[in-house]
Amino acid sequence: MSEPTIASRMRRRYVLMSTDADFVSACQRLTPSGWEQVKVDDLEHAGQWHELLMFRFLVLDLDECDVYDPMDVIREIRTQHQINLAVFCFGGDDDIRDEMRLARADRFFAKNEVGRVLPMFFEQYAWGG
Image (cartoon, rainbow, N blue to C red):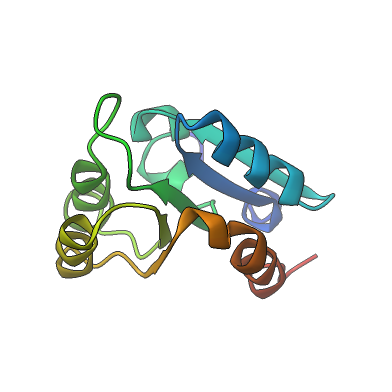
């Protein structure tokens, strides 16, 4: 296992889990210079435990159910890995949002709010460089 480095922690990267092409495209357009979007459809593709620690936050599409289960994603992050990675959820109905709240997801937004809130997260998590 490679050790995390200070340089790897200083990289401005976030994970995006969505197969909604319009949503993915909107997030990419909003991603500022100096930031890296890592789009995955399986949390394992983002890396092992020590690699997940290097991300600033996760943008999770709650409208997914065919490719991945959002509840499985939050359970893996919070229960299996015990990581306090910020998880910002977009879309979904009231039932899935309530379940995600109980599983300790952080914030919830409609997909059409991405243009308003994602830039705030980039600013908030831009520390260190």
